[in-house]
Amino acid sequence: MGRIAAAGAVFVVVLIVLIGSGAIGVVQAVFGSSGGSMNCAPAGATATSAVGYGPAEMSNAATIVAVGKRMNVPEQGWVIAITTAITESQLQNRDGGDRDSVGLFQQRPSQGWGTVAQIMDPAYSSEQFYQRLTVVPNWQTMPVAQVAQTVQRSGFPDRYAKYEQVARQIVGAVQGATCSISDTSQIPVTGRAKLVIDAALSQLGVPYAWGGGTVAGPSQGIRDGGVADQHGDYAKIGFDCSGLTLFAYAQAGISLPHQSQGQFTLGTPVPLSAALAALRPADLVFYSPGAIHHVGIYLGNGLMVNAYESGTVVRVQPIDLSEYAGAVRLL
Image (tube, rainbow, N blue to C red; front, side, top):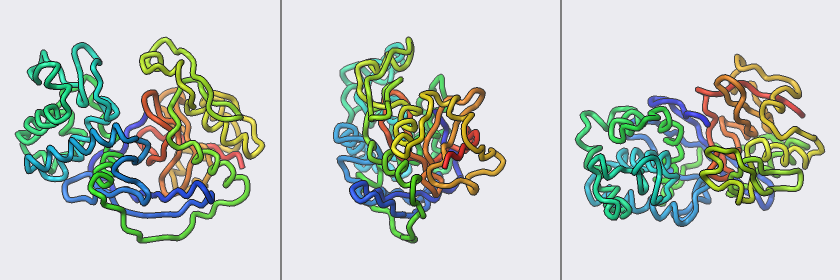
C-alpha cells in the first residue's frame, strides 16, 4: 500500500484514542529511523495489543525482542527484526509462503536458514535473523529498510520501510515504554467531521476484507482472484479501504461510492502540492502511484485511520508521503 518515508526522517506521531467518549487526544513523540531514536508505544497500548496487532502477534514480537536481548543485540536491531517480521508475515508464524518460505521471517530452508521445523520455532528464526544482521557492516547506522533487505534479500526490497514506525511502537509496547506527553492540546474536531472520525475509529481492529464494508458497518469480503483470495478475505467480515470511508461518511449523512478512484473525484480537491499542512481532520487522503489505489481518513498530525491491506486490520498509521497523491474535502 505505501512506503513510510526512508531513514533519517523524523515523525511527530500521535495517539490516544478514547473511543468511548469520542475524544481524540494527542501524544506527540519523535521517532527517528537511525540508531538511538526513541521507541515507545501510544498510551493505551499493551504488550498484548498494540497498533492493530493482537495477543498472538504481540507474543511473537515479545519473543523477537527477548532473543535480541539474550544475544546482546542493541534495541535498533529489535526494530529491524520486527519491521522485517511485520513485512514478511504480519508477525504470524506462517507454515507457508512464497516458494519454500516459512515462519515469522519467511526464511527459506533452501537458502540455509534451517529446517522447516527449526524455522517454525520463533526463537530459532529470530536468532538466525540476528546472526545475519549483526555481521552486516555498519548496520546500526544504516536505514532500517536497507538493513532488512541486506539480511533478507527479498525480491521486493521496497516493502520494508513502510512498517518501521509501527515496529518502533511495538518495541515500545513490549518494553512497556509509553510515549511522553509533550502536547496534550485537543485536535479541533467538531460537527460532521467528528462523526466521521469517531465512526472510523470505532472500527479499529476490524479485519481487512477486500470488497467489505457498507453504510451499516463491516460486511463479508469478496474474491479478487489474487492476494485477497490468498488471505481468505472472501470468508472474513471486515472493510477494505473505500468500504471503511464509505461507512464513516455515511454516519455523517454523506454517500460515497465503494471505490477509491471514484471517491477521489468528489468534493473539493486538496492538491498534492499543498502537502499535509493544508489538510483538515476527516479529509480523505489518497495513495498512488499511477491510478489511485488506496484511501484513508485524515486525523491530524500526519496520521490517518484506514483499512490498510489484506492480512491487516483497521488501524491508525502515518501517511506515507512517498505515495501520497492528494486529498479531497467533503465537509
